[in-house]
Length: 113
Image 1 (spheres, rainbow, N blue to C red):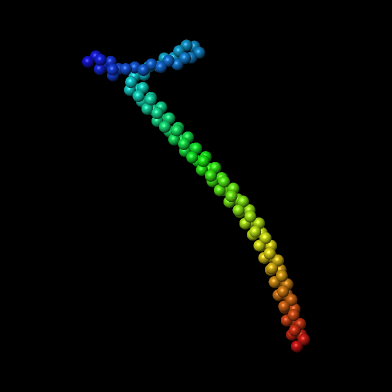
Image 2 (image 1 turned 120 degrees about the horizontal axis):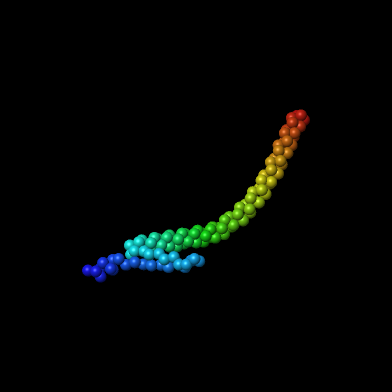
């Protein structure tokens, strides 16, 4: 019976060297298991966070190339749009001039009749 009691009363000891000597930590089996579990959970969370950040970085690189392609295409389309707007403005001026000439011609034709 004493052996079972001794097995349950296991103690873990950690020694940490310091400048002024050594610091010794004593943990019971239950406290050691809780500490080990907490370290394991923190490690899993850190690995998960690192994986998530790595995935986001990878996605950023993929989306960055798509965004640069989009910006290049947008620049081309804006240049085409400016060209079309300039052509439109020129055609409007020409149409205005044609309308003015038609009006003048109509007035002159009525004046001749």
